[in-house]
Length: 165
Image (cartoon, rainbow, N blue to C red; front, top):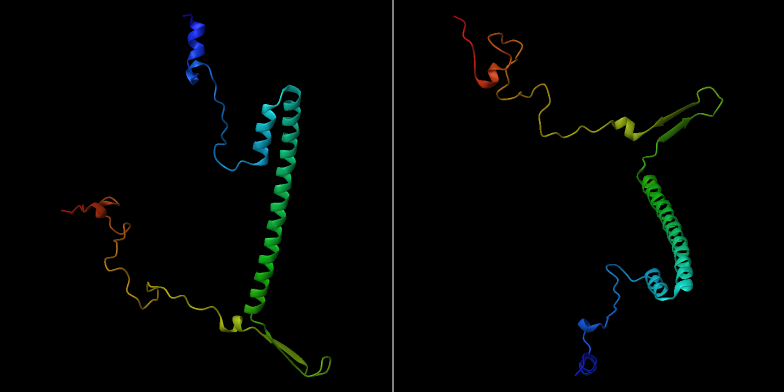
């Protein structure tokens, strides 16, 4: 029995030369661009080269269009947020009180403006630490390094002191 006859009788397996082709898109969505590139790569020479060029050209224009659309969307959102902020600012703004007495141009005419924010002044901060002059300082204040002349400037920190004899 020859080797040709034995190959004919046995079923083909991948190790005997048959080739399995499969395609897989790793990660993300299988878009029109990836599908088009896959299709173009399956075509014969002149068509695949032309198709890939057209797909690249379309892809560049598609990306440009998506960027312009997103920028327009962001511009709309900015305008909308600006309107909301302006409305909130208008509602929360304290309007000054204008008082006019007399007739403009005549003797005794006066105008005065008052703004409640300026009149009442700023609010005092509520701090958990006492900062007033009536408050006690630190429980164990650090010694003044310039007044202690008995040793080096940092002797007090490490507990050394030189006693004069």
